[in-house]
Length: 144
Image (cartoon, rainbow, N blue to C red; front, top):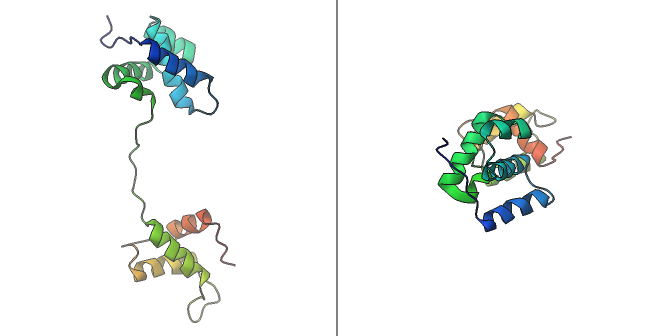
């Protein structure tokens, strides 16, 4: 006997079926919608796993989230991660520094010099050359 039984209302079923017919939707969201539709039809977890090619834990987790949260269960939750080292304002200042004249005795800015300049300006406590590279690449900046 399952602890979390998926019982869709007509509106929920229609919303899920519409989602499946729409254009660009995240693959995980579509998979969760398919899991809920199969589960509402009475399919066992093992049949859902075989039909959709997902893990048993995914099916169980989706059932549980639907019972606890409703249709919100098909949406992605925010993922944990390291917060950005530089704010948007700091990134803009970094790009401006990279576009400015190089320091005395240098012909161009290097990534390591710019990383040191970020710390010197107080834009961040620490900054690596790789962070500088990513910011400059994102802004399509050309230091040459």
